[in-house]
Image (cartoon, rainbow, N blue to C red; front, side, top):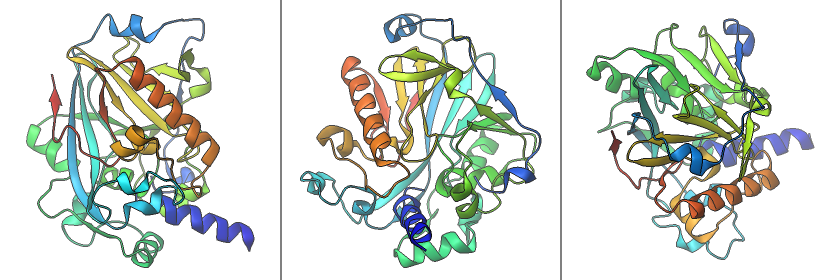
Amino acid sequence: MKNKKHSLTIVISCIFLGLTGCASEMNKESNISANKNESYTWNEVFSIPIKIKVQQMITGMAIGDKYSVLNPSDTNLHKVEHRYGPTPILAYWINHPKEGNFLIDAGLSKAFKKEGNYNKFMRSILSSMNVKTSQSGYKSAFEFILEKNITLNGIFFTHLHADHTSGARDFSNKVTLIFATNELDSMAIKTTGNHLEGKKSKKLNMTEGIKIPPFDYALDIFGDQSLWAVSTPGHSPDHLSYVINAEEGPVLITGDAIAYEAQLKYKINPTPFIHNYEKAVESINKLESFSKAFPSLKIFYGHDIKYSEATFK
């Protein structure tokens, strides 16, 4: 009973920020790993930028208490602005000159124009927290891609919480879903319904990545140093952040490792009731160290808008 209560607490703390379907219902998976004999520094990586485009999309809003995902004893908690204001649910379009078009996270499904596509369990949790989700005035990632008249090759995920995977359901089964090896745990399956059902997947084996301080594991996704997955666990079992080596300067997509800009600015830690609090704090510290080492770094936070609808070409 104690374990069930703890699991429910984790769900409640993550849901407001937060693949669905069971792994057995997905097509055969393949893994992505790297040559561990390679060695880089971020200065070396950023010295040769790549013509890769990144665009943020606001796919909808969630309205609830932002404090629910933060440490209630943190003395800087009050510095998080608009406690009960709308929280954006985001996705990112990545355009690579050779590899084509991808998303990082899928945001909300177009189904949120009406009733949405969260499962019954998710809806009951959100209702108990008095969190409301809306896509009014916004477009889903699917609608964005459709308007661009482009072919989507895959969706990279920072993690598998429903507000990051909902939109995956809109795309055809030809679109590959890509996430870290240990991310699809029982909690992800229970809380996220059918978002991944029928789709093929690839797993990023982060332990096969290389160490580029401050990160223990980094994977060069396309093999040209344009897009990197870096390991930032804690918010979820195998959470990822992404570094884009763009021509206009490096870009960091934190995912929910850092939900709000104020967390980084004032060192506000997350709620203790996430998947692994100690690892989450360690990940925040690494991201803080990375941001200080590269002051020109453009940072996209998990649920905050600093570069609203921004495009880096």
